[in-house]
Length: 100
Image (cartoon, one colour):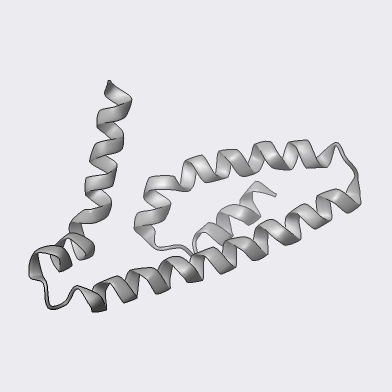
């Protein structure tokens, strides 16, 4: 099940997967274990909702990404941050928090 969800995560932008992929998979695996104990019907419903949600949220991330690029094209400082550095800035901040 975790492999299937991992395949669905490939629908997300690479930057998102790099930042949050491991954590999302971990949370999914934990929730899947909890739902497995409740029976086949509950487990099936969990899979349907989680996998469809992954597709919808991946589309939302791509839409947000492209609309942000379009909005910021006239502002070079912000556009550059969105194109190349925003996710690395978030990653750097997370690394600092972890080290603290």
